Amino acid sequence: MPRRKTFVHAIGLLIMLALPLAADAAGEPFLTTVASRVLIYALVAVSLDLILGFGAMVSFGHGAFFGIGAFVVGILTHHSYEATAIAFLPGDWTGTTAALIQWPLAMVIAGLFALVIGAMCLRTSGVYFIMITLAFAQMLYYFMTSLPTYGGQDGLNLWERSTLPLLDMYDDTQFYYVTCALLLAFMALARRIVGSRFGMVLRGCKQNETRMKALGFPVYRYKLAAFVIAGMGAGLAGALAANHTEFVGPGLMHWTRSGEIMVMVILGGMGTIFGPVLGAATLLMMEETLSGFTEHWMVFLGPFLVFVVLFARKGLYGWLVGREADDDG
Amino acid sequence: MTADPILQVTGLTKHFGAVRAADDLTFSVKRGEIHALIGPNGAGKSTTIGQLSGEIRPDGGRVAFNGRDITRMPTYRRARKGLQRSYQITSLFPEFTAEDNVAMAIQSQQGHSFRFWTRARRDRALRLPAREALRRVGLEDMANLKVTELAHGQQRQLELAMTLATEPSMLLLDEPMAGMGRRETQGMMEILRSLKGDVAILLVEHDMDVVFALADVVSVLVKGSVQMTGTPDEVRDDTEVRRAYLGDG
Image (tube, rainbow over all chains, first blue to last red; front, side, top):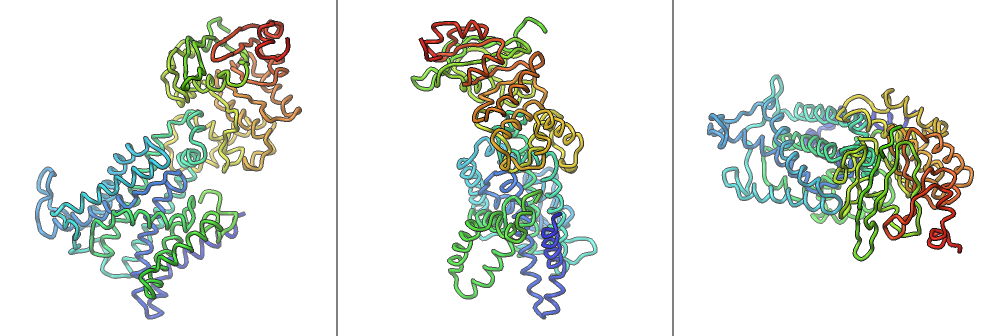
């Protein structure tokens, strides 16, 4: 029975749930804000791992969907604030700040982009797939950079955070728990997906795609569906990120951001649900502490990453739970 | 059993540069029979299997399966129509258990897999037939072992269990006995013999004892085309074949 795994998961969940209380008790409430950022990146990392770790689709453009999610929130809020109609839409909808509209819309639009981009990228594989996903993300990055309506290179300030009924998104603790709930929901969903028939097909493609075709699976459709689900997860994370920093810029789509998300997944453990959360926490904590000493903090990250990749199978998560890291995330 | 062939290959041609892997290749396989394809190294046996399964695009010619032209059909659709292959080099899912591997084959036969919620590993519709298929090839005790923990011969048996689990009407077997010990070879021959009459088999095999013991029909492939076709006895006695391939005379 997977004792050690259950134990590690329980500790992880406990830390996630108790963190704002502990931060307040320690008299360091800003830690809650830092932790919210970690959870947002954990969400986008988990979504990437769904295709990277379970489907062996090395997407180097996941930041694009993250950025799209953020821009959906940014643009809707911008129009709502200025009371101007959104171009190219029928009628004269002036946007909204309601999270219950903004966030699902962020997911849907990120998902649609993932559908179109994925449909083209998944015709390729291997290094070509890495390069073409990167190329699409950079295209979107330059597109947003050169779009003055929405701030261009300078980005957009979010004049008002998304509004949720009964909750105050300006309260750091409440913001944290909303993010936490969404992350846990996505993780639970990812876990079910990975163990389902669909998930088995995805994992089969990772191990031996030729054989999957020989068995009669139209693998392209399944991989595309996974790509879209991952894009939607990233879109939701982007919507949260826009609220967190109250700013939306094309930097969210830059390839370095996609690389960072990928590092989180690899560091935490590819092909696990919990690992990317661990990876996001570790990377952002390293950044937070080390960048206080030197701006060249990545000098320390590099060797650490190499060490983890070489010696810890399934990343930090594999190191924590040992052999049990294998089945079903 | 009807007289018309289940597989009809007509004028199949495939060149790799100057190498002719298939050169106006024509032959047919009848329902339920074991048809062996023999020939020296580089005669184009594996390439032929690849073209029949759809993994290699032929330059010309026609492949008909059950009377339908499948020359341009993608691999997964051929597999769905009952034309399954196994590989010369073991081709499995190494991170999965033996049972997972067979369950995957069964899943491929049960409609689409856009099912995101129910746990596949607890799905009786997959697991029960998977266990049955493993029993058929004598691997029931290995169900929960990972592929990497199986011996080579057991991996070959697993490979066959997967292929059989899809209930094919025709199998393309590329050296199913490769690397097997004597006893494992015997076991595999028993299984193949038990399929005779139900499943048509195109068998590529180097071990002549196996070929002559199992095959109903033998075709000799030389430089991408069929040099002769006949019963095992006819082929064994043919002097041309002996000189070209069997190495004596």
